[in-house]
Amino acid sequence: MTKNLLTGLMLSMALGGSAAAQEVIFAHGAAPGNPRDVAAQEWAETFAACTEADDTVNVAGAATMGDDVEMLTSASAGIIHVTANSQGAMSQMVPEIGLLGLPFLFPDLPTAWKVMDGEIGQMLDERAQATGLKILGFWDNGIRHVSHMTKDVPEPADLAGMNIRTPPDQMTVDIFSALGASPAPLSFSELPTALQSGVFDGQENPLTNIYSSKIHEITKFITLTGHKYEATPVVAGMAWWSGLDEATQQCALDATAKAGETQRQLSLEAEENLRANMEAEGVTFAEANRDAFIEATAPVYDKYAQSFPELVEALRAAAGQ
Image 1 (cartoon, rainbow, N blue to C red):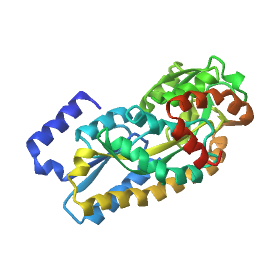
Image 2 (image 1 turned 120 degrees about the horizontal axis):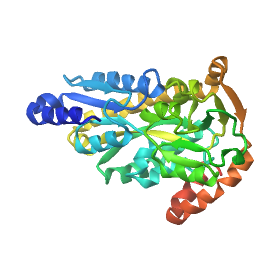
Image 3 (image 1 turned 135 degrees about the horizontal axis):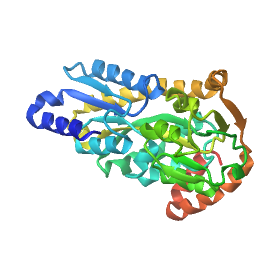
């Protein structure tokens, strides 16, 4: 978030009083047309209709309110109200949420959704509330794949020394370190420019994000590694959440669930259909040697099992491992 924008918002809150509170700010970092953006617009409509109040919802997308970490900070400070955020950024405040990205944990998207909608999701919400954030629900951020500027990377050895952008997520850094690459975190909004300038050889993302942000036009070699899953936690600041009456809280939860159904379905369809679109635009796809990647990333499980033994075991059991 720019300094001027942040200052203006804080001044508006200080001077505007109840008037400022009538606008609910829902922020996210996805590009227009991305399933996250589509769902955010649906959330706004559903929430406003449910509350039947004068409040309006301002959907601030495409990182206009800052990157994911900044949006989480703004939510906890009450500057914004809700953010459809990222698993990686959230794991900096709630480390346990990063375990959803253990390598090759979930065989498919529906399995991941079932786990997040159950007891594990409730536990993560409890952890988040202790940091000043309320998880309203989990949307999807897909199963991730590697895209490269100049080559396919079907074997772990093909990633040796690769300068790869990752989100600000220690789990992803650990995965690519185990694969012999040279990972470096960077905000998603800065990724296209960094790729074009040659800072990175490539990056990793679900096909939806690669396509909607036109990253496939820069990195035309995509290897379907499926190395990890990421969620999109929809998060409210506890200061705002705690000030809502029970009926309005339920409206926020219902809006998150309803828009989440749309978002997840769009994500699933994109995972199944976008390959053909990108191939028509000149992208080359390759299949990864999944067994080799699983073997190479096994030490990542050992690391996190030392810190979170019960949760790692519970996740593996819930995922059917």
